[in-house]
Length: 231
Image 1 (cartoon, rainbow, N blue to C red):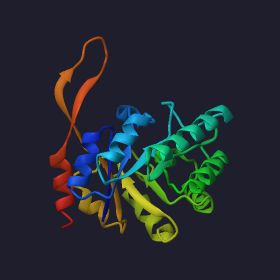
Image 2 (cartoon, rainbow, N blue to C red; image 1 turned 45 degrees about the vertical axis):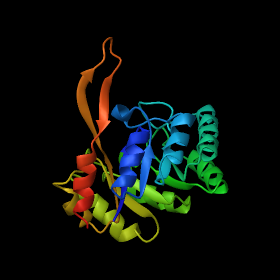
Image 3 (cartoon, rainbow, N blue to C red; image 1 turned 90 degrees about the vertical axis):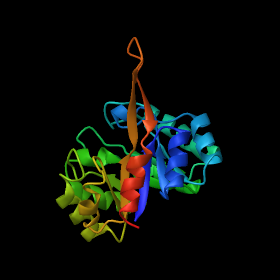
Image 4 (cartoon, helix red, strand yellow; image 1 turned 120 degrees about the vertical axis):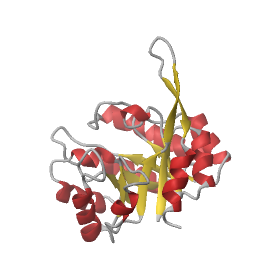
């Protein structure tokens, strides 16, 4: 089983390495689904761990429909991620009717030319026709799909995840994510997938003043408890 830890810190990268995860999805703003991290954070995660670093390429919260100018910005971020030492990038663009956008082709082509792996993220869970959508992702040569099976959690969307793995798992890696913990990960793994994605953060009960956010620590116990179930 391959584990991907979603994290926003060097400490998270080190913890993922410590407990035997294969990679991290590195991003900021986890509370809104993740945004693009800065160059320094990417570089420090690469330099301070041996974990594969896969970088979120998403500069705006609130959706996945982008303009040509947005795509040009994403191209710059992809090049920066490569320069910082990333192993892969994570993105997903939909059009105004929640279909897979042709813009994805440009970003996949660029990423592959730089030697980066490419994951389509949970924008997939908003598509209007998931069977058509995954066939398009395969044709565009995405390496991996992160999905909760079109539901709020992977457990609720397990039927769709199982269907995707059964019908398309030999053509693209299916990775389950959202709401995964030690109590349900075995059930989800029984869908036949070999890639599990989860966030491991815990509050340290320190909310800053004036709406500046809440301080969080890496939840090493969660990582350890999930990974140990498969040893």
